[in-house]
Length: 461
Ligand code: PFF
Image: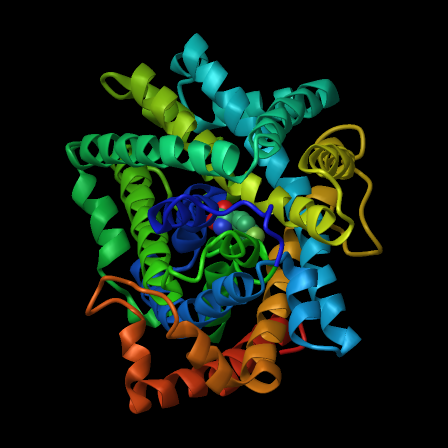
């Protein structure tokens, strides 16, 4: 084992960093519009089932693989099996980290840009969402604007990663995650005090079962992967900085719980504002950048609420962005023995450049579509990562744990580590009947469900 490899200073630091990875644009930008388009509470219900039955077991496995091998995804598989195939599964994770960050960084850049626009008070001059949409489109038609903010966002991530695990990733998450939570609570409280806020909460909490169909289920599963940062080795890489003293099971519960509660709170903060202003929640990806800025700005104290909202979005994007880039950086450090500085600058530059076509998708290359798909680079990167690479990675993880490493070995490893929690820790794995359930989820339910998602996104079912 590499004695120079850094570790988190405590399990709490790991939990904050892993929660920082999980809580991202997926919770604040994606979750509300997917829920809005798919029946609100009905979607939430199915999503929660997916988190518990598939997300949690895979989250345990990913973190465990990292902790057990103290390696990046490629190194982790290489350590546990001689079969070269699995190395390529790890490589798929590194490729996914490139793909995700190339569109994530564009949205991250918009978030930083909008924080500055909020600071300048730009949104108070918008009378309606159409004006905000026009503003968004005008800004994005300027390639330099998009590339410039992508650069700013990217420099923030690279700066954090350069400082290392403790002084960079850990310190950033320890500072930013509490700030994120406080901002979110302020927005939730102000949302709940608005007239008509109950329409927003009942949209999110009273289910309309007629909305549930197989597609809702598949969409919810795909999103569960994205939101928990599963399937590309981000949780594995973060887990690789954990020590054996720390219980993976307890950490997984907390990360999944924090991620879910923050998605729901973000939903409350957003839907209360949207409904109380009489707008439609099913506004698609533009919900956050087109609909919200004018609605927030028109509230009493709206200047500050708009500013807080985009700060929240920026923080969420930064703490996830660092976990995405860290996967490829850890690969270069572990496998090719690069220094952290060289690895960060090399991967940083490569991913930065890979994102440029996504930035140009809104202007110079807006007509360029990939291979008859009709998707721009930006849309294709989102589609490929969220709908194909992550579920595929999750599928292989379940197969690896269930059939190659073996559930017994997984359970033996999960039982290592002290959780200090009687109820929410690894002691549950001492129960044979729970182990049977876990084995069923890992060996059968997860791979089959993921396989179905896969067929669905490819349009085969
Ligand atoms: N979980 C992040 C979000 O919800 O925005 C996105 C993400 C981060 C996906 C890290 C995958 C990953 F490895």
